[in-house]
Length: 311
Image 1 (cartoon, helix red, strand yellow):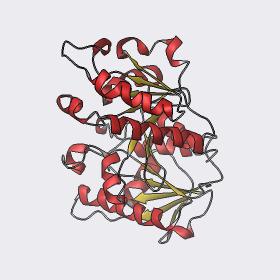
Image 2: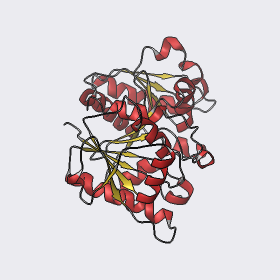
Image 3: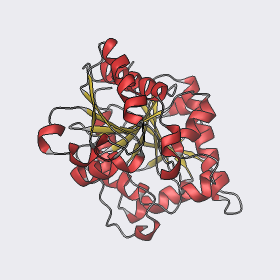
Image 4: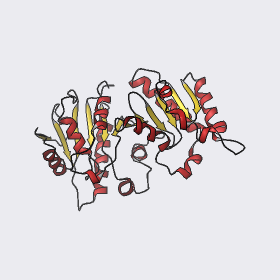
């Protein structure tokens, strides 16, 4: 499969996303063989284009098939009565309808305010898109070409984590990641799995490591997947360890995202595996406090676009 169109959902109106996107589009390293289609409000996009000194003419289209290569194509989404939640929903709705029609198109979305847009109904955009597309087992992969991480539980409060870690979930997620690497990067990834408890130990009679994680790893090894663990999270992210592996599986969000961002800052992207299409999101939030200040680090959007160079 060759991706020739990138749908870019602007999402949150007051966000740094368009700033970093225009920094990319103004650079000399941008992709030149893909069609860029922004889905969002034309007035907001044109305002940010002016602020960020984007001098090329913006091409408004009404059908995604009319997109022109080497142009910034826009499908305008109206904002009614400042209802931003409805506006973002319409942006995603439009993008999903296009993605269903064209298998050679991928999705990049800007960040959303989870409290207002997702309204505690979904843990994150990963789960939102899975629900909207009928996908059963979405997997969050935070990707960097040197090292990627994936949490078994995503944006779940820590008090619920142990109840949502299961042998079946670990097996399904690692199978998906293994297949994704083989298909898109033509490599069999080396995967490390972290334990849940400090030092992979507990004062209880049994532990999640013995009951869930170790049996899951044994099952995956029997399938000839290159996986090892469980490793203690507190000492795993040392240079000698991370140079040996392609992916680290953690049991909860901050267990793996905190060290990854410490290592690579914003040079990473969020990939959702398990959808009918490839979905990528730059690994940053809306950061509305920095809106229109032109001071945001664009590394994550460069990482997102680099991912599509050979896909």
